[in-house]
Length: 392
Image (cartoon, rainbow, N blue to C red; front, side):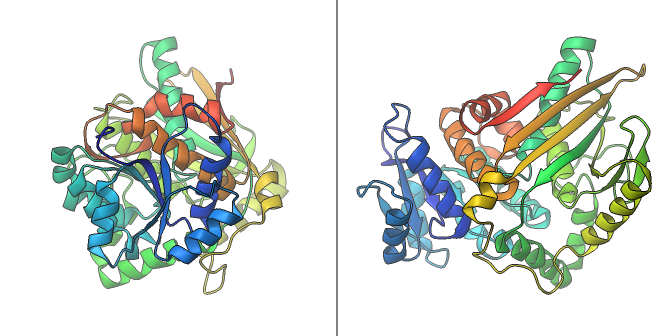
């Protein structure tokens, strides 16, 4: 494929808010580097692509590709001419399937930022077999949801195997600190998912099941992360985490696709740590009410997002605690610079695309953890300013 296709990576949706950040990262971070991918910017409107290319100070000869989700021929041509498509065009529930279908048919690798599990399960059911046949690696959730969590658990379990000779059957994911904002794309994706469920109520089973992305496989009852609780070990109140509904499903899918290296009795949840005492309890209760309706009818509009200063000043810190059957514990931390949803996410999905170029994983619909694993961890450490480290 590398010899016959013009591009290594095409950034589809480069005129959108997040797509522009991905293109800007590739243009700046890989400028004059020997390992720079051959990449192009894609979108519906050539004039807007030219405008964004100038805005992000990409080289004037950066290729531009005109493609539209409503034009199957343009999508097919784009996919047949590149090894990897990075797409930021959401909500994927509304706009994602034609591109997935085109990539699968062309044997082209794909990475997106989907946090829409009902749509993801539909794509698995419809395209998994064909993706395996064509060799296309379809990698959903390649941003803040769910890379730090998916890979954080993977790395903790690697350490557990090295220390104890067995995986931790119980892992807690706890967001210790996070500074960042949502964009209109995130809000629109959540709302599109709710509208899809209203039209097809059966999708609610996928949303509510921790194993919604592991067809034909389930596991033990999972911890309830939707109720504020005090964590004696961490000495802090914890609250529901708005991204847990998608992250936990991806963690279980990675375990499923890798042949259950975490065990078939694996239990996992995610919450946000607040603080001890009465203030911590009240903060946890406040977060719990926000998770039930994080945006309401208002919120940002698509195309909006944090300023450059907000992106630069953002950060996140996630702790994973593995509990062994004999009571031993292992702690593992994942930290990232920049706003998690956009400053860091744009780097994460770009490096997912680069990692796919080097991957020898077979075709199929997977997760960053199942398709790329430690190879992606290495790229994120080297290029995207994420840290992965044991803490005890």
